[in-house]
Image 1: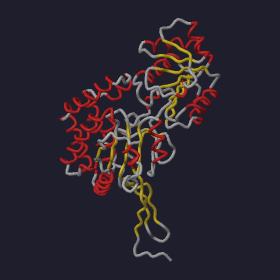
Image 2: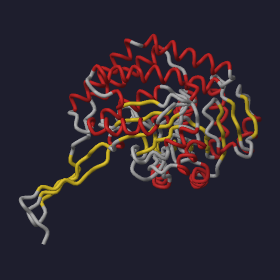
Image 3: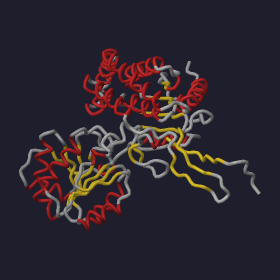
Image 4: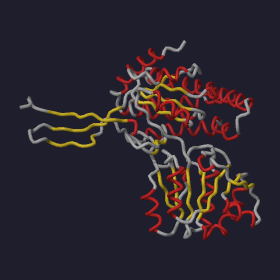
Length: 421
């Protein structure tokens, strides 16, 4: 029987030790995790294969199965990403500001770990390594709760992490995993405010809503992306086809993949058949508004095209489906994004600098791109290393949550016998 209070106590005790570690000690733990991950790759892949077999037996979609899948290449990439974190600057102990007060006392604001992170996530087992490594680099302990669909994979990965922690002389309770799939444990975890300092949910809207409504711990929400690209009348259409293909097809099952394509009417007749043919090569189904549907029906193309349904522009597809809408111009594009976006990732393709500036200023998503794919909203792509999540809220952290997002600060004041008058 899972004793969450005992796990919380152990995590809190581990966090006190982690907060005092040097960068060298933390980097040794990370290097040991990477080495252990490579050494135990066969065990991890064997457990993942059992999860994948179960997922296929349950009839899960190919997109979701891809989110669950670990391959030798993906395990190697996890080890490589872990080693990259070694080279990232350690934010802990750095001073955000420092000044001498008029009374002669020196005051500084210093970065410190948050303490204990509670992370609830679904599907992708790579998140287990990402969270553990970023938490350790920032001196945080972590309690993890993954989805039942990857239970074997996650347990194998946690065993790798805990074996590495032991070899590095650190408590294995620095990273713990709730191995009981009972959903009631999530509700209990959300009330563990005596021990957990921050909750980070990574999953669908239902999980986020549950955490916001039931948690007595501060919650950082993110990872749900209804992402848009607006193709302006001045866009380079050949480049635009490449960007749209990359944003939709490169990895459709992730949160920064493209969901809705907005197109200026003056280029729609030329652009839409070209993009439809390109996307058809990857089997993308198009959900087109009336104007887009009429254009595509008049022109020969290979894509499967159906009319949009009433809720299609409010879908995070996570699969090879793309909504298409012809809009009157940049203002309607902005209005559409305001109405349907989850404020994750949006892009404008244009050669009009005034329109680019208008779009960037008007769209308040966690990342806004000009002439680039939405797929770049990622901790690794932004040079942050791995990420715990992509936050779409406005307080504490926004966008890819790398090292600095897992810190807070304290005031440190040095005096010389000062007393307050």
